[in-house]
Image 1: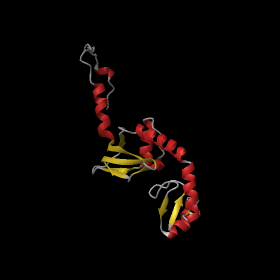
Image 2: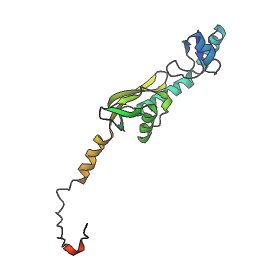
Image 3: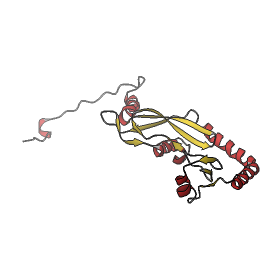
Length: 183
């Protein structure tokens, strides 16, 4: 069954695209939800006319999507997660967590336009961000154990500087009578 999509559906197609779906999916979900219409000859003519009239608007949208995609070039998402002894995560890293990490870097991306499988082990993965029909960006996602990577910078800050003068500690005189006995 041929359907003209009225909105973007990740995994199926984009708005104003003609897709082939199973009849039950089209009749029972896409059409009643208003996400698509049957691709009849008259509907295809209307679609062609609308696309012709909106060509300039589509180019502007595509340019804006490309600009947003350029912001993600070179960005690496690093996620610290609690890990068991076998390297298995407690829980998983999903699109919502990737969207939160991108927001921390100042890049606001809706989690619904990110596709990836849930990550359940430590390692390096890729998330695909769909901005527009032909504008997609692969974002590397690195998952590491929570305690391992964060401990190194803290230790570096705690080390005394070579330039600093050594601090001499005054001896503390402790008499036996000041210490309470454990008897």
